[in-house]
Picture 1 (cartoon, rainbow, N blue to C red):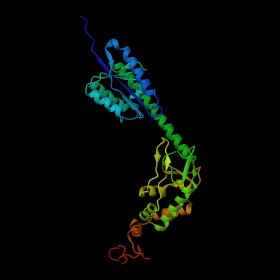
Picture 2: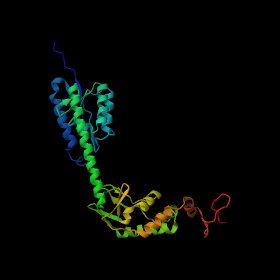
Picture 3: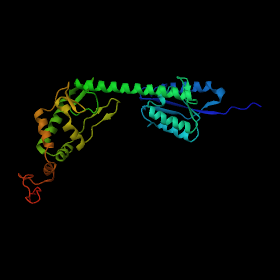
Picture 4: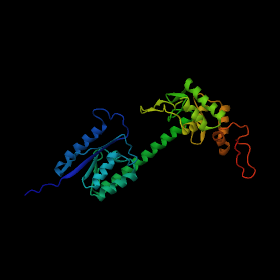
Length: 312
């Protein structure tokens, strides 16, 4: 009597780093799955069959393991539901040699093998595992080199004074990575700096700005999401007063470069605001805590304990 082959449950894992194009009727995740299904069908004579559960990570990097579908895949492997994992290419599963070594350890512990459709090897034998580690070493090397190139290009662009993205500061609009002054918002920025110099207190300034209805910068991010347009808070104001973009500068790490955009705040106004931050915090706090007008507040101190005297 002919012995029936043991069924091998095959799971297909797909991944794409960005969400671009995922809304199409047929996207790259679908293409990866079709390739995986075709490979599994070619192994029907060995008892392979695809399981119905889908493990699709759209918009997730392969540089870490923080991916919902991957977590479900590993959980199902630990539960004994999967015998082999099929991917289009090894970098769909991971781009980190360390992470991949951790996954392979989980695969081995639960008798699960790994197959790459386009690279023609699997981890069922020692030669396949050796080949896989060599490929991953080169893949990680390539990833690190690309990262270095991006960082070098980023630094070089900032040295030229180019705005390289991030939260768009109040007072500016951006076009083709170049900042242009928004005249109406620029008046608000100048007003905020002048009022801070007059009040000498972030707390008082914030209360005044919120009372008068001032809001944070409202803009649309590169991903199409609306940002800002909310009441200001202390953190927002502190970032404003430390942001050298308002001086026409671009900062990269601990270095400052001349920007390609115009300044909103004069050096004199900037220096006055920074001088307030250099004051003794206790002395500055007196401007907030003391509700009674007194010319000598913060100046007259007790000879015994050196505490500021309170006007009554």
